[in-house]
Amino acid sequence: MKMRIPLIVLSLGIALFLSHYVGLVWNDSAKNVSYMLFMVALIFVFEKTKISEKKVNVFAGIGVVIVGLLFEIVTEPKDWSYLLGVLT
Image 1 (cartoon, rainbow, N blue to C red):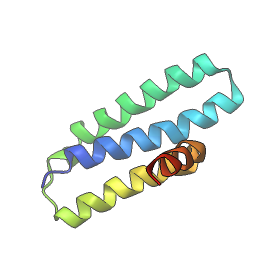
Image 2: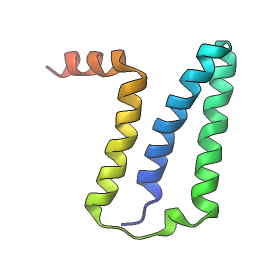
Image 3: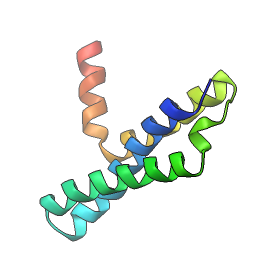
């Protein structure tokens, strides 16, 4: 399995986490812009360094996806509690 899709999920989580703290310092429009900038920068770095082309075990890819989701859970726990409430 190539690392491209797991790294995209990871970059979404990290970009959300970092832009949340930018939004605490500045306003919401800066938060929205910083989210896109962080996401594009992370994906660019992963593609430029050829990390996304590496083949890894499926479980390692799933682990990277879980870490990306954990970043999102830490940043926005209300979204996950709502989702769990809907599913149960």
